[in-house]
Amino acid sequence: MLIGNYDEEKETLQRTIRELEKRIDASNAARSDVERFSKLIQKYTSFEELDSFMLHELIEKITIYETPNMGRYRKGKEKIVTIYYKFVGALQ
Image (cartoon, rainbow, N blue to C red; front, top):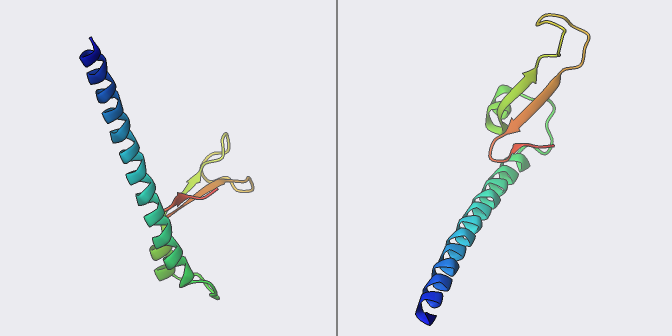
């Protein structure tokens, strides 16, 4: 009976260790991505004009959402724009 309890506890602890290792790996990957983005953005601390090279190097994609009930070509209403930066995703 004690051996059964020990084996159960051992298995639970091993699962917990695997879960924590996955979290650590994800955290390290995110930190690495932020560091790469930081190094990349430091190249552009002062610039006069946004050019296509900078745009392609810094931004993954830009999503512009259609204004509800306005149709595709109607102007004059605010649009929701989300910019997804490389390595870090959308910043709020």
